[in-house]
Length: 286
Image (cartoon, rainbow, N blue to C red):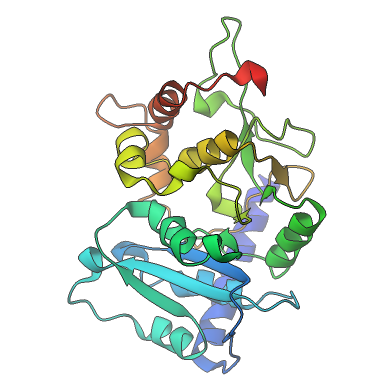
């Protein structure tokens, strides 16, 4: 309970702070270097609050240059003017890209892979409803430098099995920690994930496959792609952490859809099962 109260207080304070920063700051995040790219997406219901997340990403204590890219669906924002909060950020260096179609949460990494990852960049994905601490990016990059070629993350699940050798339901999977098997952990995007160049399988951009097998589970798809490539996943901290959310943004959440057990919803368990079957993954070899 004390942790939840702490998160609530931090959320309120950071929201107020970044609201003022957005109104009055002239600090630029413009960079010619694309060696480090922070990528995210959002949708209409969160377009008015995503600036808070982006301000927290602008406010990092890392010395290395980086750019922040926001991918938006033309389909979702057709005829819609962007809020002034995002225009102000754009003037200070935020890159906003409108893309065709709508591949939901996949937008935050799919297009960045095409534009940056194949050209040697490190891509860090962020969620649109989280307030990231100012050490967030630095620690991801430090962990990456210490573990070249590995996917780095703050929060994840560890794949475990029942007595019959079947994968436990997603809700039953324990949170990962620094001692978890690096091949058996599923990084979750909520707290941020770093993908280095050449860390994902060649199928990673095949929309027909991921939209069929895992339309609402980009974390599971990218875990499958790193697993197929033989890439280890390394945790930044000793245990999984969750950063303060933007209050009111999680009422309609893709994550809650993914965890839903309703028979008419393709949930995480169903999607993971499809991925395992399609790629014939044998976890006993991991």
